[in-house]
Amino acid sequence: MHTLLINGEFLKPIVVMEQLEQQDKGTICDFDVDVEEGLLIYKISMVNLETRKMSKYQYRALDGVLLKEKSSDYSTDDIGLLNAAKVLQAKHMTFSALVALAIENQQGYLTQAELDHDLSISYLELKLLNQDSKNTIAFDIETLRPLPLLKWD
Image (cartoon, rainbow, N blue to C red; front, side, top):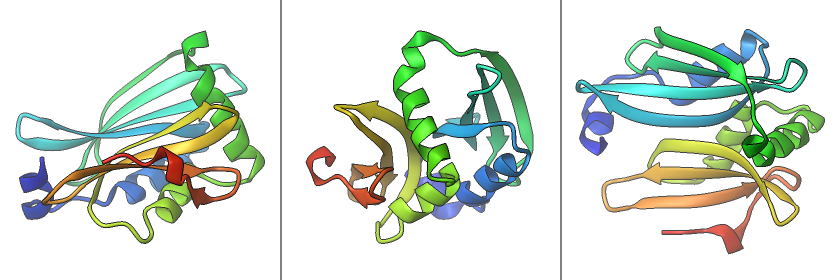
């Protein structure tokens, strides 16, 4: 994946997220980068708290073309991300803006970002890939600051 990210031309994940958010179908709660048949694919999940639906999208990273879309009711297993999505909405902030703020001073390529709620804290968990390592960080949605206790290498 790192080789594709370094050598390939692709839209930045934030651009694809912003385009989806402009359609106003809910709140993005999960983002992943995957490689399928040699192509980078962005997988984005969006939750709509009003309709109680979870929508999953797959986009070609090269040009942002929508490849797949699937929608279903969300389940009680999604309670952590639902709580975090509510906090994000209460702050009148988009997922893409939160991700941009969280990675502002970070090195590497964004490969995953997911809303979660644990220990009474709503946060964004991010994975960044660079040449030497893969880092996971957590970013508090309420305070808009990194959570140093939730930092992994």
